[in-house]
Image (cartoon, rainbow, N blue to C red):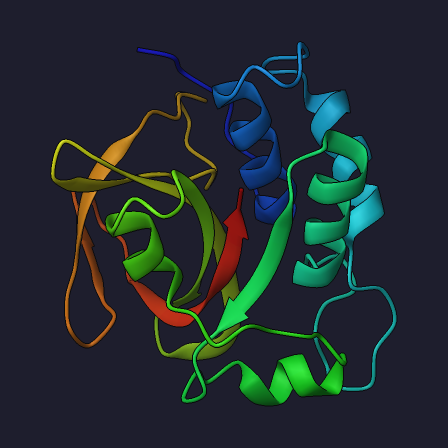
Length: 183
């Protein structure tokens, strides 16, 4: 089983780590577990200055899609359900979205991988990106959150009807109905 590095504590680089995990899983990048490689991706996909109070270092899903599509020849597009709590944020940033549930698409086999956007706790602007796949009848994810072992592996999870992710450990993630499909 492949293991990967976790993001540095407080770095807001989960979007870049999700892209890197995808590239490493698919053998599209040779710089496995190279923090400089991930840092360079993160510099390209940050939201930057904005008027809605989002941290500038957060990842912009549209820039993430551009990075995957243009730099890595992996067509990617942002998807968001109409009732997603992130819809006002997407509209503020003029992010074009497709009305597709990424977890349904991955589960049906339409896409092997997706990057989901979850809220953390009850904070709609505390967002976290994670690479997912559906394999052997089970959803699995790579969670880049800082851990002292610096050891990230695929973890099985259950997606409840209310969007809450149930997985081993003390996590409070809720799927926002938004994510990125990678072809």
